[in-house]
Length: 468
Ligand SMILES: Cc1cc2nc3c(=O)[nH]c(=O)nc-3n(C[C@H](O)[C@H](O)[C@H](O)COP(=O)(O)OP(=O)(O)OC[C@H]3O[C@@H](n4cnc5c(N)ncnc54)[C@H](O)[C@@H]3O)c2cc1C
Image (tube, rainbow, N blue to C red; front, side):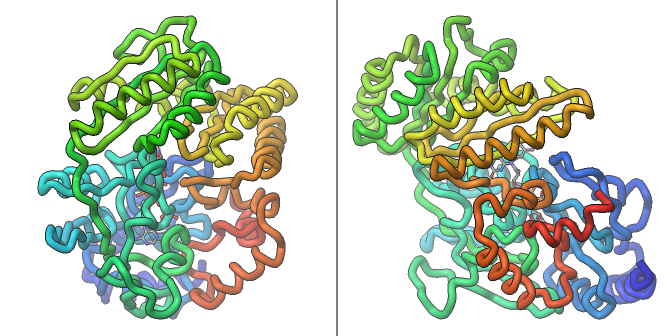
């Protein structure tokens, strides 16, 4: 890239010496995320410490048409933080201050590099609650969560990241600093650009500060681990619990194949007769919770549950969750290659989706274990293979799965975003006119296409396809 050297010289001058990193080892650690997108080395990495530095980087990179990829925790599943077009990675790990937790207004103001789990601990220490809980919470950061509109098990009752973002401070592609949104719960002034920016995968603007809405921390939580003889009874359990007038904070499902992987990792014994597992979690007022627990127990037993374990204390609840939290990594270890698709269908159609996956798995001879957030219909369908020659069959199976999801009234991604990996499949869900409209929005925010190029839109990804 011919523009890169003068740009790096100006960045050095603007930020001070030693701030623009070009050491090959550093570059290598910013070339990948937690997806199967092949490594792409950036030309330089800048670990920013404040918004002004982000503005300097964008202004200089815009002047020299150098691509910029923002990166938070690097745990993305679709290649969002992989610098496909090389250029500069803006890394947020040092911009990680919780600027304030305002208990009376139930809001928090944070920088984008705050680790999500650390934020949970900080707000819970003052009796408040930030519900979005991606399973990667020990290593992902809030800026990445906002860019992906991250969800997690608790989305069933509490929604995803977007539901908690009141306002953002951002830097646009030409280096302009802007505030969007509000710090009040209500507010309808102008277009809702905050909602547009949340989930825009770092392609429209760079977040430098987030104002979150918080909730009071629920008084008590109870976790139920439900063992079931088959998937049909798991599907019935989900429906029966909701029909009983309950809204658990999560209902997580493991199918037969994922259960087989989890058995050796589980802190509680899972008999071979169990072919499906549900983790159901209820929260709220201590006394009301007892009655809810009773109704939920009756609902799952009526639906065919063979065993129900209940945990109320944090340590015991962690034991029930331990295997579920490790599942993604256990699956990754079980084969050389893994792709995880986080499709969503209306929750009543989960059994149909799992049946469709079983058929597709047999037809294409690809292993496809599934698990996920059954309560909100967001199922992680995994594609496992070990021999590169199987890749064509895997892609055919993924395409067939996406078509089945759309036929069931669903959507391609519940929380991981489109990034690089899902971009080729976007036209299965969205009309060409809708894709073109979104591309025009991208043009408006980023006319030179320097902000996280090669993401979301099929034509944008194809531009870098040769490099993939
Ligand atoms: C084991 C495991 C479990 C997971 N479980 C879940 C889950 O339950 N729910 C879920 O939703 N996801 C899950 N994920 C996916 C991933 O953790 C989320 O997508 C998370 O939100 C990414 O955050 P990050 O900080 O790692 O972002 P990164 O991977 O660094 O970046 C993600 C995207 O955000 C953009 N970005 C980063 N910082 C900024 C910024 N300041 N401004 C603008 N754009 C920015 C990047 O360019 C990129 O497009 C899981 C991943 C793993 C590895």
